[in-house]
Image (cartoon, rainbow, N blue to C red; front, side, top):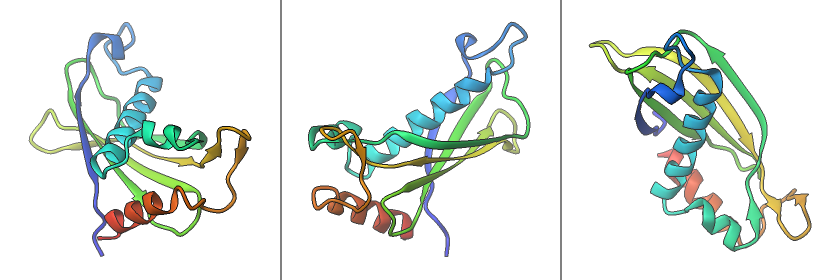
Amino acid sequence: MAHRWFDYDFRVQPHHTDYAGVVWHGTYIQWMEASRVECLREVGFAFEDFVTIGYDLPVVDLQLRYRRPLTLGAQGVVKTRLEVSRSVKLNWLYEIYDMSNETPQLCITGQVLIVPIDIAKRKIVRRIPAALQPIFDSLHQHFSD
């Protein structure tokens, strides 16, 4: 089964790079975050919706594999998808490509694990709360297609 990816396009700007014009490693994480937030928005759940109903979604694990650098002026895309499971944990997968040439070049692969936190209690949610169940169901349906 093919999994649905969300694409987040960007261009490498001077503030994304070091003095040599190579993307600084932390910038990739910022693009991954922006892609995940925009992906949620596209499927109908703005990040602020989670906060409004009393939950935060912090990163609890982050993994990156650098394959090749992006450089100043490059056109790139972050491909993002949710690994479908029935767990309360949300495992997001990423591929970042340099799209500047005819053949896209894979630069970074990564994954981010996020879990809901009850803001009032400041504790990790161990089971999907009723308030989040429709969101989780919609995410799983979207990424299972």
